[in-house]
Image (cartoon, rainbow, N blue to C red):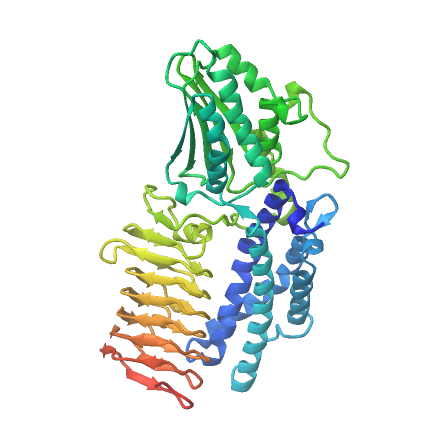
Length: 537
């Protein structure tokens, strides 16, 4: 079996395992190790504490190895493990882990040996990048199996409009925030069949011959602002149902035979095959609304290899009960890992507000949910978080630098992204720790019109890539305003750099940045320092 043949519950199980791996291992261990190792060759102060942090990060990699093995051996379908689906990626992860743990690469080099430190950093970063690349390929392949439910709704309208018109019924398409609807795992054909069955049922039962009112069926799609689940509704202006009839509809569904079973078929497709929920609301004489909820994420329990035994009608679990049953399953594989990754991509415009009035209260959650190319607008407020940018999103603060990203234990922003942007934000590292406020490890992050301050090390550190740092106020850095090292390039212009305890801009020996006109003053060691080597231009 390959990825294209997996059913929707198996895809949800695979996505859930990826989420636990990311937050429990990838984010907590590998990103941190990569950041520290890359910083090692250019380290100029705080060596004791820094080396302790690096040693601790190395220990975590060795301890995390068994969690990686559990992840690769995790079953997403009976007898089918993740390593069976992604053989090449699994081999790459296992080989790089063995190289790190068994190849002696976790032994720290002598601190006074610059060449050994540089070689150590290159090896560690190379192995970690290989692991991250393999994990990202798995993540992307799984994400590509998602579809946009709005596309299914468009097709439903096209297929059913002529039938409705022939029956004298107007078919309306209603949407609220449909452009932000979450991509979902779904079998497009089966989902379309289930929704078509709902329209056919409305045509058949909602409008008897004696009905003299306006005959309309409305198809709606919306997004649950809290869970980001997709909500699809099919409403009619027909005769409605009595409470007794509604109760019978709610108890229906024991039959799981073909598409002619109506309610039973819809429930089977939505709840059993798509981990969703179906609910009915009706008022006699006014009409009926059927609501279909498709989850952004779920983790359904694995059925035994012999297939499931169909429950009796009275025992049939609802979709809500099936989703609630995931607690035990979550515990068995990677217990103790952090929050699940909110991986479902969202629309092109996402609102973040600390008071709960937006789509998310956390910038990190919004980034995880965003599709590449999305714009995340951040309302005024203080957001205490360590933000990892690994996709092309634009994060834009509202107000006059009133959206504050504040970190106290790590860098405020760590970026490996291509095409990402930070604009109109106040970014603060508010603790004396061995990190920069913003760390660019690779990619071409664009930082513009931001206020950046650091009580740790530099305000902005560029250890790789080619970022653009433009028109920012960079001030009160514990060391340099901007520190560029490794083989980094990029453009740095129009910045106001004030009152840093190191240099305004420091350029490492192998870096080759383009330094434009920057207003630098009050920095204790001076304006610009270019270390021996290629320098800047």
